Image (cartoon, rainbow, N blue to C red; front, side, top):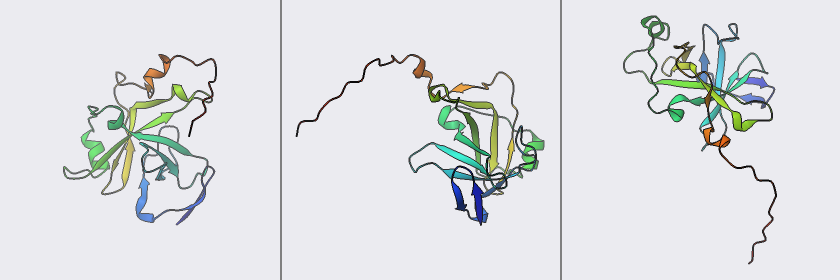
Length: 158
């Protein structure tokens, strides 16, 4: 199927790659159909693109890339809603926020991860305990890095 996006133009996506979020996402309760688009083969970040809202595309990242020990308890109600069984592959992603003009201050929302049952292709946005970071810094070392004040040009000798 073809979808129209404001960032990527018209793209072709396979129907079996669509994700359904029956409850929508926080701030977008009526938007329920998405597809995940890869940035590049070697990139950990992806785009969660709405099927019906061309302007809605969110940068996402697997929470285990940010914190390999990250765990979130899914309620019995949530497990039932997503039809999750013990053998189902489950993906947990965090939405990334990149402040305009300040990419070094990018953060991931670990408090409200997106959980997807890859067997059923159904997802849900969880709201976890407030002790879990809402703004987990992606580049914590960026604040400690010295700012270069001059540009040095080098010429390679052949």
